[in-house]
Amino acid sequence: MNENVGSPIAIQAAPQTKSAASLLWFGAPLLALILACVWLVSSDWLKAFDTGAPPVEKLTFERTVLDDNGIHLQVRAGGSAELTIAQVLVDDAYWRFRQDPSGAIDRMSSVWLHIAYPWVLGEKHEIKVLSKTGVVFKHPIEVAVPTPQGHVGHLAPQALLGIFVGIVPVVIGMLFYPALRHFGRTGMNFVLALTIGLLVFLFVDTMKEAVEFGHKAAESFQGIPLAVLVAAGTFVMLYSVGRRHGTPTGLALATYIALGIGLHNFGEGLAIGAAFTAGVAGLGTFLVLGFTLHNVTEGIGVVAPLVDERPSLPVFVGLALLAGTPAIIGIWIGSLTYAPHWAALALAIGAGAILQVIIEVGAYLKRRAGPGEATFTPATLAGLTLGIAVMYATAVFVKV
Image 1 (cartoon, rainbow, N blue to C red):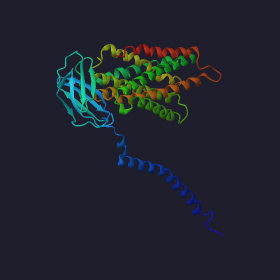
Image 2 (cartoon, rainbow, N blue to C red):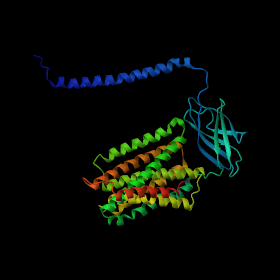
Image 3 (spheres, helix red, strand yellow):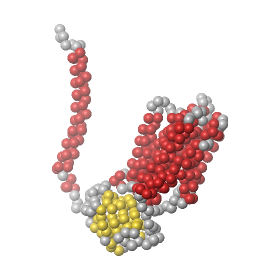
Image 4 (cartoon, one colour):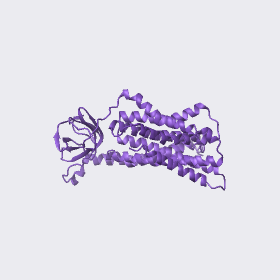
């Protein structure tokens, strides 16, 4: 009789053997892929298909700065190979330029072009960049104005601006909390539907801006797919995290709403900062007032899930900071450093977070209806419509 049958050694050996076999069968395809790639690169047999055509060259203009020293352009190379800039024309005249760093531009790398051109205030200028192979890339400057220079000295006034367009309107909206507590069940359903309405508008608006920035980014970054996939991934991640302890209600739901609004305000601040450095928008009193009116309803949405609770003052302060402070950070980053692909990424994250909040508030509203009751009543439909209409109307003042 075999004494090893049923022994602990035999029982442990079987799982170990199975694990080793699984690892082997998983590693074999990967090894085959690596070997195929190495052979493809080393053999270089694709040269048989070479027709002698020049490589595809692409150039994206990411930033334009106008100052007393001339015109400064940040450009990023794309295409299938490195790109060498040979000449620069401004208004159909060749001009000497300095490239920093110099030399050929690797794929997906960026450089600055410094052109000592005496641009004229208020005039239109057209810049043409010629590559070594003769490809022409055009970049118009519709209205020439000095570009405000972002530096540390501007951080304090920019923070004040961020407080006024981010935190202040959210706090004003949260001051409606005592009034919301006196609403009946129908009134609260109206407010929750109002919250969904404003969030729906924020989602559509944020996603649109993310796609627009993605379109402006270098093609190598796949800007539009990047925005859509990041938004979807953010939604799935936040939805999974939010549901790990069940459906969020009360303070948890209010926190998610504040987080979603905060990410949106970060993107909004990024746009303000980028407009500041580009010199394309004057942040006058009328425009700042429009941002403030536009964001007041966000505060109402944050406190709507808290009407059945009695949170302390620090809770309200924390929610206001979570929803409003990202606007300050966005303005700082947008004014000091800017790239279309980073803006698209930030806005896509905000859109995904807002979509998750829409789903959760909608689920909360449905639970409040109770079994056998309709979710969409005249009150909820009125709130949904009003929320979208108010956000649309106030957005008129902030689009420049």
